[in-house]
Amino acid sequence: MKGVQYIKASRKWAAICKGEYLGLFSVAEDAHKAYCKRAKELYGEFYKDTSSDINFIIPELPTKRLDDMFKNIDNTDKSSINIDFS
Image (cartoon, rainbow, N blue to C red; front, side, top):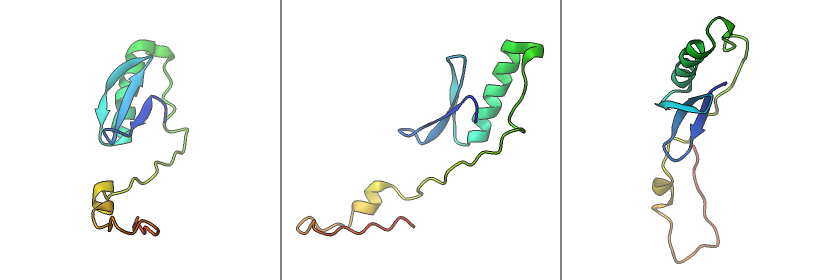
């Protein structure tokens, strides 16, 4: 999705247009809307919204925090660690 980048540290989506940071958003579509708004301001009549032309897939992010997954690990035996990612 053009103008959108996932920021792993904050677990949010950043909107960026021509190197200008437009903010962080919880949803990628909102970040893309911010990008489109700014691009329209910059490019005027030459701006073309391509979001309807592109089919994109946003990967599902893990809902569990890593701390929660590792909290029950026994520190004495590290030979086998099973993590439930469901």
